[in-house]
Length: 416
Image 1 (cartoon, rainbow, N blue to C red):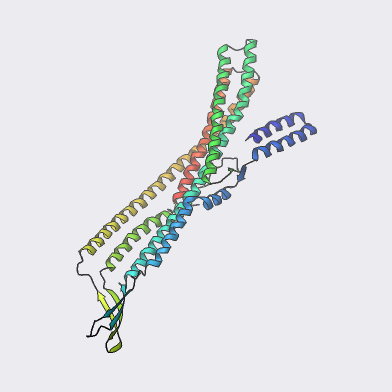
Image 2: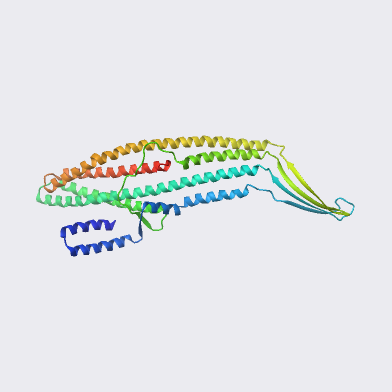
């Protein structure tokens, strides 16, 4: 910011002096000031800022880690109980006490439960992937909003800095005219009050620019201060026609519903019989090496707890389906409101670009000419400056509000 102000001041001096020596000297000073102010600060493009934020933002990392954790659940789909091994010796099947028996039993559980558990895990993975996409879209929107806010703060500061030059001339001219007796003390105090008010607003704009810089750096999770390479507050392109709702949001809502549906199927699978296999090797004196195989089937006789769990899962599925429909409808309504708001803001921008800004420039030029030729009083000149400043400030705010709405619409739709 310092080197920009210094550069403009030097440029005006160079134009007036028309001297090659001063040109070389001032260009050298510009380079020194630029190098000093650029220490610890880096200029980045929008794509670089987005890429840096996606790489370092903890929300993206947590979403990726959550998906990886769910994938690990696939190893539990064949959750076979521990094998049971027992050995007995003594007087088991004969009169002598030299008998022994080895039993090995392995429960296999239900044969279809692993299938439904795998379906549930796949749904949870899909939900995690959709959530990860949503997080990425939100991070990109945050970076773009911080980018837009920085440019808005920069343009506001430049606006007040530009007007400060005219106001300083106004104050000097007012003091001179007051000494000459051409204006009253009220007009002189009016010029002084305008200078004080503008300096206060310029300080506020400078502080807002610092806040915007810190916000942009924080959103990108950069260790050192970074600022956008752009300086102009441009209008983001957008289509206010038919917009496709975000696949990430709609997929997330639908996937949550499918999770609950898979949980119902998993609960029902527990009513099916469970299987187990076993092996027995025994010694019945005087016989040795007697062995046998066993296959068993077990099924529950008391179904009340299982039915209760299934009913709970069905209720959760119905709730999730209703919530998904409500969220999808709310998303569609939000997009419709944003489109209408954008059309309204677009009309405001059209008014500024086609009429208001041109009228403000014409008013400023005529006010400056009349003031320098002493054809107008300070009161009218101050009113003219305030009017021009308010119009340009309103234009900057209109662009910022429009861009924020565009970024929000981009977040909830797939229109780029």
